[in-house]
Image (cartoon, rainbow, N blue to C red; front, side, top):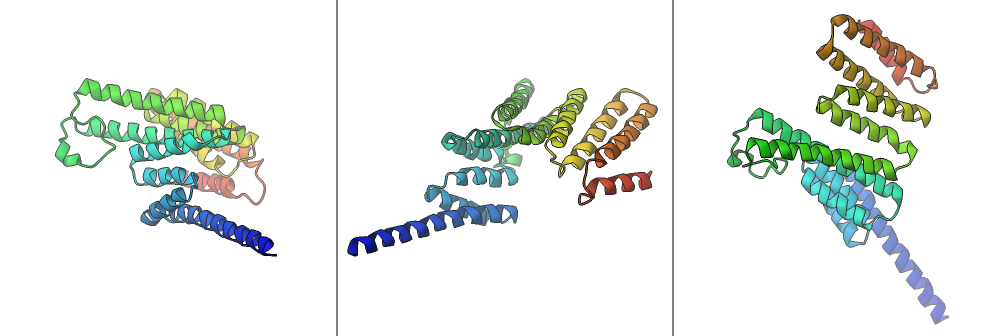
Length: 265
């Protein structure tokens, strides 16, 4: 009888411990979504102490939201070190790539804003990696950040399943757009639309369609006449209507976009 009681007591204590571990990581996720970042950091750190390694991943997301991509990359890589499942590796590789995309954009912005900015003006601003470099070194660094982002996006594609492809291709489209490679931006946004449609992932489809239209408009605005700009715009409306046919009555986002766009023009 004593042995049975001891076993039951051990099971009870273990279940309480597991529940406590789950609660800390759930608190971390909820606080992150609610943008209570200080609380989220504390909860994530507690979850790590309780051997919940996903705390590293959510800490990375917190610091990415706080515009501290270097710190975010460190935590994402720690999570990746403990990950054994391919889908988890593919997901964290995407977030590492997004962090490098942030570093690329921030440093490019600072470089073109003011080549002579002083260290004292950006003390503690860790996204500024090129500080105290000459112009050539700074441009080389910005180019390396761009290549790092591409590398991790492609690694993410390698380990992710097809249902995650649309998000990654959309991210790649943004990266090339900001690099002013409009042809590749359009190419990857089309891929995002293709995989979203293929997997019935319609939630983000309106966003991908709007991105594609905008990338085409900027491309044509830079290259050709206003006639092509208008053709591109109305082709977008046609595509929206085409995709609207596959959307159920419960999904009204696309219909609203069509109506609003037509009414505005």
